[in-house]
Image (cartoon, rainbow, N blue to C red; front, side, top):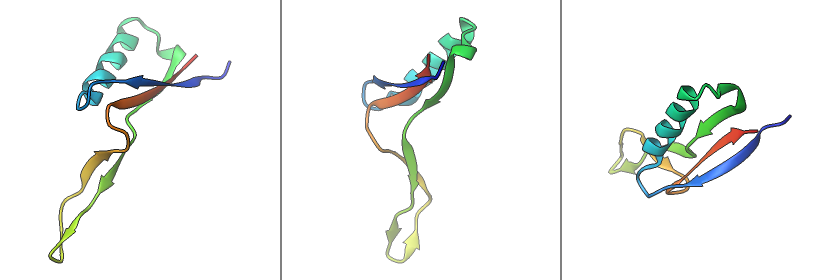
Length: 71
């Protein structure tokens, strides 16, 4: 059976907390074989200012959303 993607809407800024809580619940219930990846859509962004590059910042594509794959 193929796994499908599901999207979870969270409070803004709590994406990482919700992701880790779901991963912990999956581990504690021993359901790892039913779940695939749990992802927060994000990218590293480097800003240029006055000819100087800043360090990369992780920016979410969609605020308050993450997705996971399961049966």
